[in-house]
Image (cartoon, rainbow, N blue to C red; front, side, top):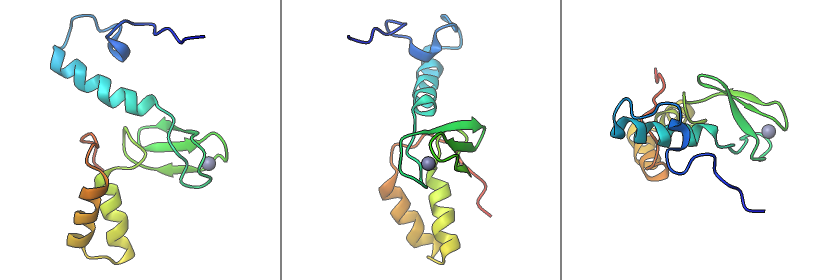
Length: 112
Ligand SMILES: [Zn+2]
């Protein structure tokens, strides 16, 4: 059976009506869609990771809980921080991260 969407075109902004402006609502759709989507677990590899709280992600399969971005489990800046912590130079890490994640929404973590 074909899945029928609850809304024709507004998606997660249902309930907001015509408020807050089209651009902001579009941005909101992008972030929330990514947030609600199940993500891949860095521990067991299953697509069962959901957000527990802001920046806290939990795998429904293996109960692995970890810190990540506010709206995505991994952010560009988080990747850079991890690489830098491993000993790679920041310039090197930044270059690699830029290649890896180009479509990340602007959700940043503390680095130092
Ligand atoms: Zn897992």
